[in-house]
Length: 75
Image 1: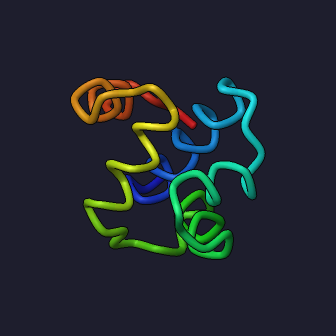
Image 2: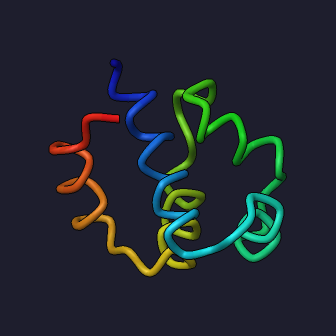
Image 3: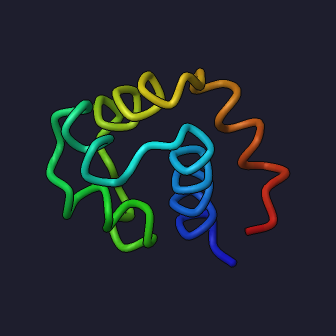
């Protein structure tokens, strides 16, 4: 599994743990639902740093924690 796919899968896992729907998280982070869907599905290979920071803010996860979890994530 690629880092891009794991990246998106981990974001989806965090979103579901936070009990947020994809449309709700996209609305809160002020990004398009389609963009969030592409990130979660590993199709957006280069999400903007600002986008990632907004998503992690609403998922109550620091960037450092996210990338630490990502290194251990098996999808």
